[in-house]
Length: 93
Image 1 (cartoon, helix red, strand yellow):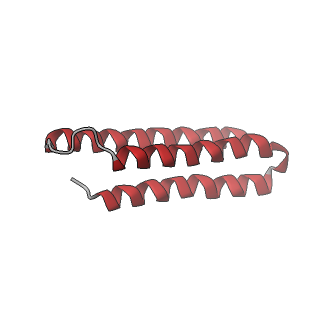
Image 2 (tube, rainbow, N blue to C red):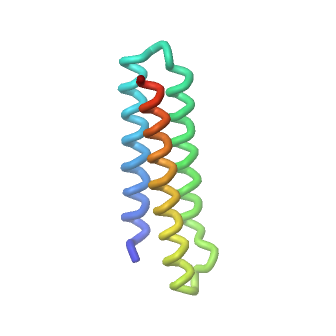
């Protein structure tokens, strides 16, 4: 099982990449600022939601359930970050 610190670092890294790509998009497409800022807000909300889930696993004593919980969090993180990158890519066309 990965440590909490590594999961939190992964969350921060991926959300940071989304936010930095949003800043670049705003620079190149200032006319789409509102839509890009909405993606940034979703990214920050995702970060906060994932941190809440990481910090408060439902079953702290049952290791198999905790492992499944963290696996679900990782899967959710990758799925939602990928969707944000796709949304940002569509806005930049």
